[in-house]
Image 1: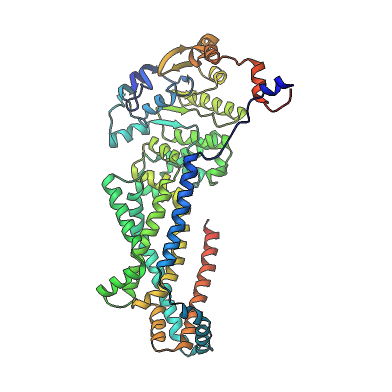
Image 2 (image 1 turned 90 degrees about the horizontal axis):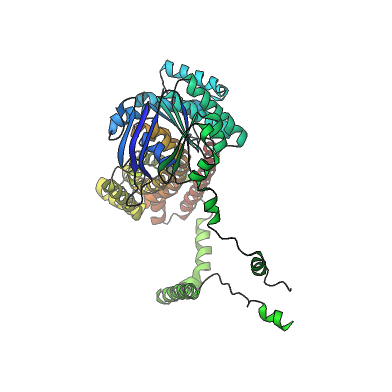
Length: 269
Length: 270
């Protein structure tokens, strides 16, 4: 269970990106976090595994406080938090297997990591997960030889190798074509129930969020303004989160006649 | 007709640079021209010697021809020594240059003090020419190969360290972030996210420096730091011009072989 309470993040002296955010995610639920760019979605996910340092507030994973951890304690906590990235964040020049096994870096010794002598159990788990997502035949291919969807599946497997207690996905489908991104969303949804793992997904695509998740959280300017089932996510909620029609009306439409004159000043008329 | 003419907006003026920028350009051109004029004016060239040069060239050429192959054995041995100096020095440099590049790169340095220490080492190494380092080490260790190896090393640390530091600074940060997220320690992050990314640059830089070091070590002998230069210096001092010719041909051959070898390696590695 992930419990976020009163989470605030402020970069320098700027306005806070997140203000007093409360969010609890239980069991194997898939939660979509929607919001415009700059709403604080990415910052929120990165506060959970402390890639971004929260300014104040508390984040508990299965009862363990994550805020304030340092050094080895922080690294031990991070092992239990898997993360999937928008840009896949694979190591291009390493093989698919090495990328996948990198998910175990928090568990193995430096010697094992350098010499690639991972425990047999890790290798077995790697093959099982790769078979689950259909990339096992790429094990010895270089990561940059794969297509976008395949690369993201490597990213997902790497995160699952950590045996995480929660999976964070930061815009996992934003770099993929529509068809592939549907597949990745479906994969995340089914993995959540197979591994009984809570999954938090930052996502722009609202229709995908409604289809593949059972809860939608809407952020705007660092505040949660929607939290409910996809069925309750109406177009009003959408407008509230993305600014809707009001924002579009901020720009007054230019008078068409005048525009035309300015566009072609040298044409004789 | 007249009304329509009046309604037409005036031609709009567009210039790539504004007045201030253009003035700056003129000032820069003027300053460079003045520097060149000043340099030509101040430098003292004894022109009669310049006009005499073609004579001297044919004279020297005649004295060199035909190259004297009698000392070829010694020359080949000295050439090998030259290559050994370059190879050993390049290999040893790696052990110093990599840690220095690590602390001299903005994104991996442990703290400001290390950053400035690293940069100081790089600048100090780069600002002193190999021959000057060689003079220094010949004075300390006496003439010989050791002084040559150290001289090449001290100059190469700056070169390899600086370029590797830049390669480290240019890596993609995203894999680093991913490795952090798995709970990996700093050492593991370097092994998995940094090293693979700088590997191609490392080999390219290493091969390039080895190539340069072969050429540099051919002149080390002029100050007594071993290699082919020792024989060359001896031959020039004794006016053995045919031997000098042989040595020059041998050096050109070595550099060409080095060039061919490095371009082959570069193709294989990258």
